[in-house]
Length: 125
Image (cartoon, rainbow, N blue to C red):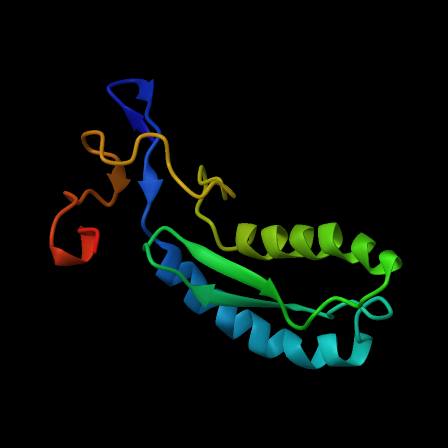
């Protein structure tokens, strides 16, 4: 995002919108994944889940990995598939990060759209 001619980094709160699009796309791709059946004992697809924050999307393989050493090669490929699928639905200029926290979280106007952190949901239990 540009502000006063300078690049500004903000946390995008559109995880829920991306998740909706991913669910539709995954439902359509589910038949293809079942036909391909993954690489041997590897899960054929991924599952997207809502997470605590509106900026978060959780992803998991569609099934467990196999119990053999050769199955370890599937982990990186599955993670790459997850990132590529999410990237299809991000807005121009947005970057999908795998960090669990955002360095500027809580520092001034740090989200897009802008919201002040507040309310009982944001308080630690």
